[in-house]
Image (cartoon, rainbow, N blue to C red):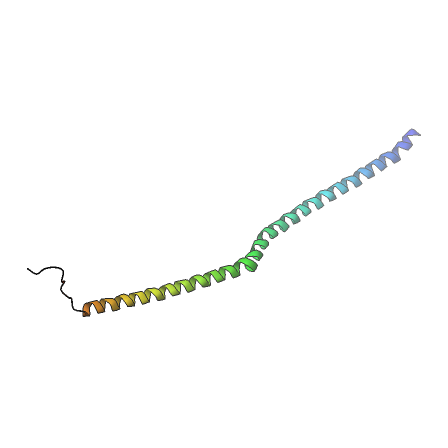
Length: 108
């Protein structure tokens, strides 16, 4: 009778071992795919978050900075043109005024 009692317990052990093996494979598969999803999630966070911050906060600031720089450069060009015009007028005025002999130097 002892041979008969061993058969059901061996079958039960075999069934439990197969069930355990299937659960372990399922857990490994789930852990692998969860790891892949986490990596994709973190990559998306690292790519999308800086783009969002740039477009929301930095881009308007940079646009204002560029506009200010363009205005400064335009004002600089206008000031340079006015200075050149002033220098030209001073040269014309200097060339049209006759020179006066210096009084402090005695004539020889």
